Image (cartoon, helix red, strand yellow):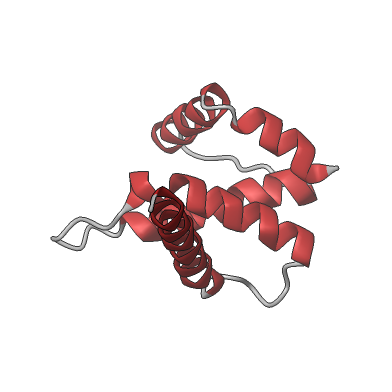
Length: 112
C-alpha cells in the first residue's frame, strides 16, 4: 500500500507543477525566446509565494511580474535602470535578497 500512496503523492506533485506552469504561461511576452521565458518563468514561480496578492487587492503580483521583466532585461540584454534614491533602495534591497537566496547562481547559469 505504501507504493500506491507514494505514487499518488508524486502524481499530486506533478499536477501542482503543471498548474503552476500553466498559470505562469499567461505572462509570457510574445518577444521572449524560449531560453528567456524559461528563466523568467523560473524566477516568477520561485518568488510567487512571496508576492501573492493580498485580499484587499494590493497588486503584489504586478510587482513580481515587473521585477521579473527588469531581472530578465538586466540578465539577457544588459539593461540597467536609473531610479530615484527612494525607488532604487527598494530595488537594491530586493536584488540583495535574491543573491542571498542563491539567485546569483541562477543569474549566471541562465545567461550562458
